[in-house]
Structures are given as C-alpha cells and as structure tokens.
Image (cartoon, rainbow, N blue to C red; front, side):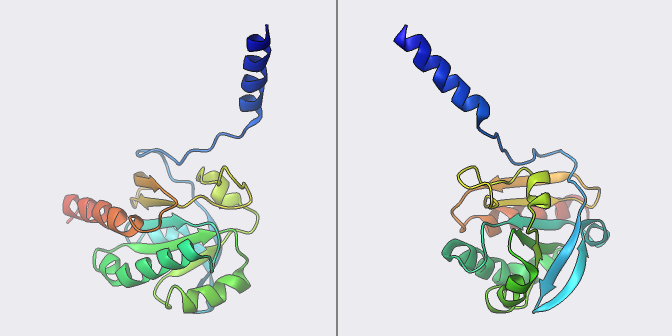
Length: 179
C-alpha cells in the first residue's frame, strides 16, 4: 500500500511539473517582433524581416552578464562575420530588459550582433525554451531557422561552448544546399 501511495504521489508531482522541450527540427518557427539592441542602439527586431535576408541563428540564454552567457556572447561575437558571410543573421534572446541589453550588446556582444529583450517571456515560451529549474529564465538553446520559417537545427545545453560550432555547421549545410 505504501508503494502505491508513493507511486501516486510521485505521479501527481510529475503531472504538475511543466514540461518544456525545444522545438523540433522541421517545426515552424514562431514569428515574433521585439525590442533589440546592437552596439547599444535600440531597434525593433522582426524575425520575418531577418529571414528575408537568409537563415537566422536564434539563441536563447538565461541572463546577461552571467558567466556562461558572457562566454557564449563572446563566442557568437567572434563568429558573427563568418555567419554573415554565409548570409545568416545572429540574434540572442533573454528575459533581460532592453536597458540591460543595451550595455550587454556593447560589452559582451562586442557590438557584433543584436540581443533582444523578452522580459515577459513570450518569445521564450513560444520557442519552448523555458528553463525548467527556474521558469523566469530561458534555457540555453540555439536554433537555426531557414528563410521559410522551418527549424533546421536545435541544440540545448547549459554548456556555452558548442553552440557556435554546431549552429555554424547547420548554417553551412543549409548554404551548401542553397547556393
């Protein structure tokens, strides 16, 4: 009987826990528009407009100025010119407000790529990138989105080091198929 009660309690606990998982390859990427900052200059970012120029590397990160997010921003900054040569746009998204991202875009993104503010978590939720441990933050998830809004690649890992290499490989693969 104790086993049955423990099993039911465990099952009920799981039933109330939110289930979050990144969008699957082949899924339609939700369109969004939000405030963004590039080199400390604010602008309105639209995924639909960015996709008109080529694929988009959209990456979510928990919070500006934290260790892993700073490492990841530096990695993407160092690779931005290579992404641009392949026709891809890089944009990072976090729950941070735009004033924080104005500073982060200059110092940690080195004015190389834009970061977008999602203080209400609307975009984070639409991309299923809510951090399970703390739903107020995004999980560290990277996407490559084709110009037709199709998710070409997705990768979730709190370790910031593989995101750039893996998204670069996905963009190169797309570019080879779309010369």
